[in-house]
Length: 216
Image (cartoon, rainbow, N blue to C red; front, side):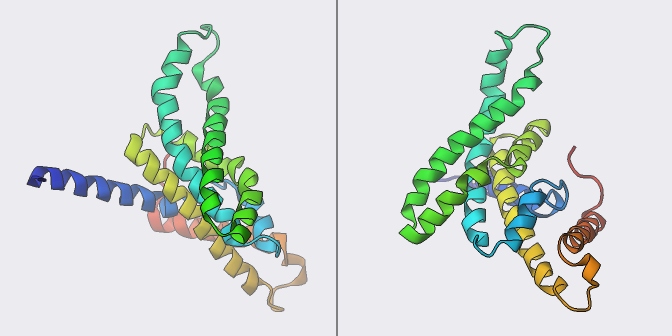
């Protein structure tokens, strides 16, 4: 039977998970705060052949599973590798390889999980899975978690929130794309220029709302 202290610990863990997920969605949004994955986002909202959900579901799942793998890699694997590396080679130089390995492992797990979806959605999501995995929004999230020394729970929450944050950015930019198609917008600004200006204004709005004290 749970005691009051156990229940309090669980509630604190849930609150911490939610707070770090919200932090990743808004204050540390991978697109608006870090400009990670912008090039793919611009192409995604303009491509009628790719559904937002077909791309973002793999992104969210890869972020969710790669975050704890990244934490385990930095906590347990890196110290062991340090013992075998020459002194002139810093362990930080291997981070891209380690993070990419974590992302690939997460991609394999997500590939299996996508088998639970109906055939039409399963095929479409699996087609987008490689692009959703090998993106700076995934690798950058692992780097942020490592630089901020997040614990396991915080890494999972931040990874999940980063995936939701990317979905949020896609939906917001897609809505802006429809509105920027107005004839009132000068022809010279239509398309990519208007998208970039729109994303820049949104980024400034978020910075003005949450302040400049974001993680570095």
